[in-house]
Length: 498
Image (tube, rainbow, N blue to C red; front, top):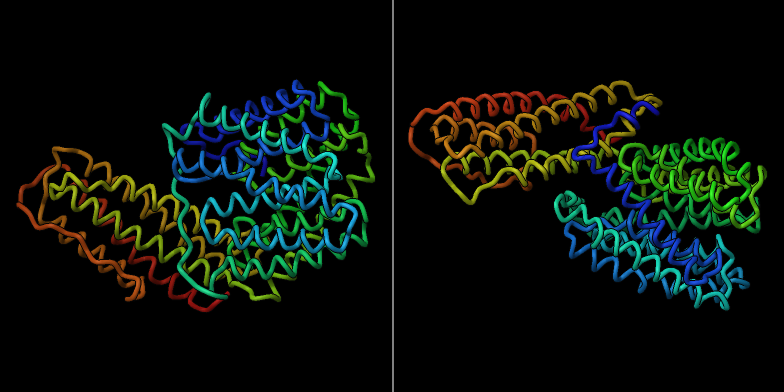
């Protein structure tokens, strides 16, 4: 697992630069909060607000990212005031927390912005419990939160705007649905059940730290879309928390809140959170747990018993999430995986059509964005089949089929990347054989996609002129056709829901 984290590909060093920028932005937020005379709890609030702004805002354009960041106070301030006002009214507080948790999940139906605002609202309520916020502290906490968001924005959109040169890939939209068929609606119901169970059991373990169980249950649902994904994420959250607790005993407890050592280790944890988030949820959670341990050290309440309690509360939250996804409106791994695979296959068709049109002489056609779209969709397919290829999965036959499907889809992506590079050559001329090959690819895709989801072809007839570029394009198309034909067997074999 450690080797995978360190050797995972990082094209353009994007993860490295994003992690370094996060350290800079959060450090600036903490520094400004301290220099403006805020209390330690307010400084922590500002730093966490900056972390969330840098971590959760994932809109496709810089302008959309800036707008989402500007809207964060509208989601955070009212929730912070609500949490502070209900501080000593346990029943109303618990009910409000569950309502915010459900709303935060349901908001994902409105895309990346809804997801970000939902996360920020939930975490604002969570932080209020973490710090024991009371009404008298609201002005200082709100101003610190605003300073944190401004510091994060200054670094992200001014000093170091990575996205301006290398925009993040668009997040693929889940298949259209309505009512209880929509995944976000089902997850909102599941979160309500999991959150209520976690809150009840968490309070049996601790009347002060019960919110850890609710937070663990809630975060397990983030970026998941099926029963299997949620179960795997729960397992990884517990594993990451246990790893982080072990590290916290070694570094956070001995530091005992000393400012300079704690600041250095916190910066390393922030870097680790951002650097590992895309490749290992387990390691990300380990860094989060160490960071939380360091913050408790600053507040002067850290000891071994507190860390042991965190493990127990996390386990309770994971168990409640598992029960909810299995018993309440479950979304099967098969249904989710099949939907993403169908999207990927339609993307293969679009990539081929764009490349064929470009080779036929259309200056407006550009397969490169379609290839990027396919890569993003393949990432979502890999996430969806994670439960099937997990080392602990007992379904060996399904595991082998899932691995074969992933390998063949990767072959398709590789051939399309090569086809796009050939099509980008302005000297490559059209060859009638290309149109025929593209039609065969279209037929192969149609054999794998239901009729209602098929897209019209886009092939242009042209001259018979031969060119080396056409020969290379034909080679990629023939390989793509073979990969699609090979996909038929495993996809049909996995037609029984899992």
